Image (cartoon, rainbow, N blue to C red; front, side, top):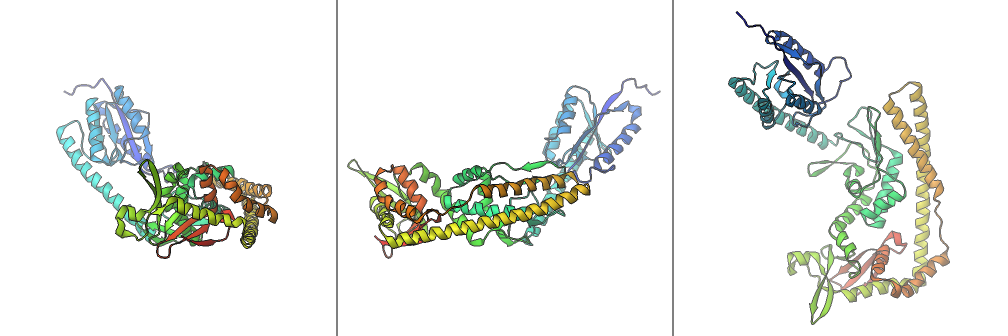
Length: 504
């Protein structure tokens, strides 16, 4: 005679799916898993099983992690003794990692909880069931590894064809409605090109980020399908560095260590991009030290060996209580004397030679004329650039206004309307900014007087001010060991002629 069951056993159903696609439909993976588990629990009523009303569903979460909200809630109830059986549809719904699954089963055993699968005939309440579980989990982990490898191979194959493989949109591009493709946002593209030029002028990622903050320029602002706005924060140095390094801007897609021609349109000129990469690489090694030691080495980070295209690094030695400063080719210093023919350069002599060449600007009328001519050309170029930026902003604002009116009339999705509203505000801000900051050409006499005052002001500068002043005028100083000459490369920010040579 069978013993009548008087005590019910609380049973919880756990379900999980890796993506939220089609979740809005009435029938989806989570609902199917629950219905299957409820039917199974119904068939076990003779054992006293009673299904809990609370749902433990993890959506859009990988089975490779145990950091899941619903699973955490389930574990809390288990600790409280409110769950004695956990029912799942398949074993891989609760975990796809053997080590993590063993951790879960150990937790269940400690609290006297059995794990039951609807579609796989096992129960962890006995030894044979636990053995079958470990065998099944080994295959589940193997399957997950295969899936990961196949996804990676497909993404690499897509990248080798120049396709955008997904992710968050970047400043200058929007993701097309059908996805997996980029389209140029003209107004943002104009701003991206300007950011590259600002960095070349300032030669510092941190200073560029501060300049963008002053201009109130921010990261990409985009809207999810749910209508949530993401991004739009000020540029950090790390985020700005990643932007300047991104090959998408020159129409390239990175596949492993190779750059492939992308299917999207480039928005940054390749020459400008390469200049920025060279400066970033140079600053990566020398910028931090240059800023920490500006008072003692005037040409630190500027002086470059022309023989091997490697920066000179400042060094010093002490003899009889005297300090002797000099510059050494970095390659020669790290690889040995035979790596480069450039000798050690006495710091005082080469620094004086460079400053003397700068002082000639104030006394050479032809050079002053050249300076003013370049300044005039640069201001004209900047004015034309700003006019073009205003034109693009007006065109985009007109287009957005039309699309926004149409979208509201057709009751388009909230995410689309929100996206258009954000673009509308951004275009209006650009137009307002350009009207507020007109570019004016200074008088010719003002430029000439400033240049003549360079030599007279020099003695009053502190060592740090001298370094800042030189870096505001010079982009690079080349030393050629074969002919014993230095070549000064002036920065566009200094409004000076391109090059001027002097013999050592």
